Image 1 (cartoon, rainbow, N blue to C red):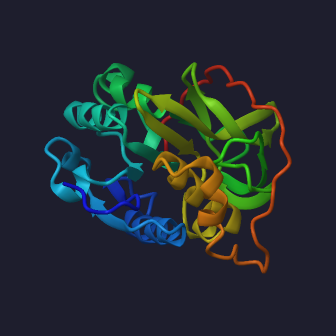
Image 2: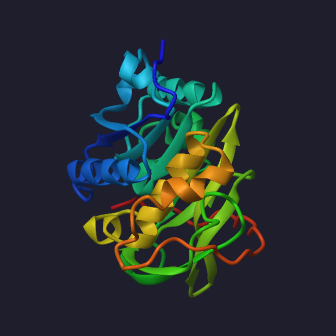
Length: 261
């Protein structure tokens, strides 16, 4: 039986991809969640979902940073079932690398339908650089945010049909959504393509996005997210203010896929 009334979180990292620092990500993401006022543990490995111990089973929201093409189907389905039953999921950056392993996308179907997108390529502008993030809408994940610039990887993604886009970046061919939310059964899912390495993890805008995404996914009431997410300064001498409301964006169509790096 869960004894806490405050939501709790667990940061989980997993994978074998040498291009992503899983240990650094676990430490940085845990710090961001704690900044939001949520007790947070950190752990390694997605197998914990197939037969969850109390620390996993009792967490209200999972913040996941995966990096690799192998994702056991039992782990996918177990996580999907937990979120459908009312848990929250914040999936960060390479956590949506699906369809590159044996069996293709069919083998990762449960994860793709849970997260709501998959990595396709870095696009035509190189693998990384500095770009502006434009936040949109009055959703609690971005309601108190302003646009910000970040140094990070470029991701081009294929999206599912039911996502609600909350942030985007400009590309040579238009716009690319980089943060969105969706419902999954009784649970909530937020994905952001941001968060490759320490340059992004230290960015005040990214940190605020993770805080508010975690609070929303954990079920913190919308009218309380402002006070929860502003308990920690943004790191640049200012506090969170009311962001300008704008229309929710539509999701783009699929793009040509290339293997991630």
